Image 1: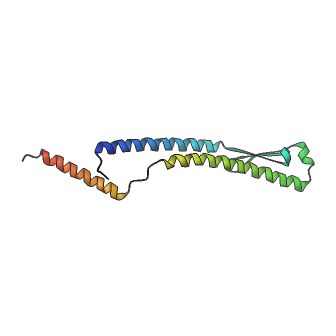
Image 2: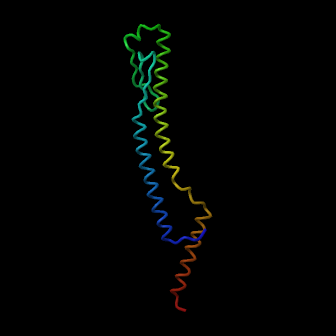
Image 3: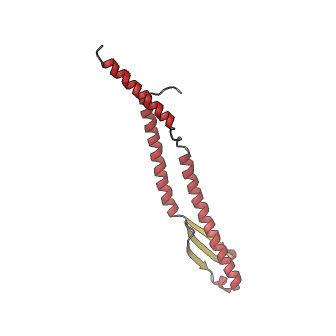
Length: 138
């Protein structure tokens, strides 16, 4: 790899900073969107409806009057199905949001390894020595 100039380093870091800021904005937006996730599910052909939040917590459970006529065991099973469907819906939405975040963060370049950083420090040190040596009276 050819040595880069300080200007190229500066441009690279500026570009990296812009990318990182974009990722941070995306993370903040994703966090806000995750807080607004609402999953919906049904049971007993729509007689039982459930709503859960992005954490899987039940927020709403509606049983239509006709649903109350179901056998108790059947109604309990259908309530469970509606809640699970709502939770799966919320989880699917949250996973979609996190997939977008993963795609953005995957675009960031890998961290510089220690040997590259050491090489750049040595190169800059040599350049400083050359410039200082040229300024000395000879």
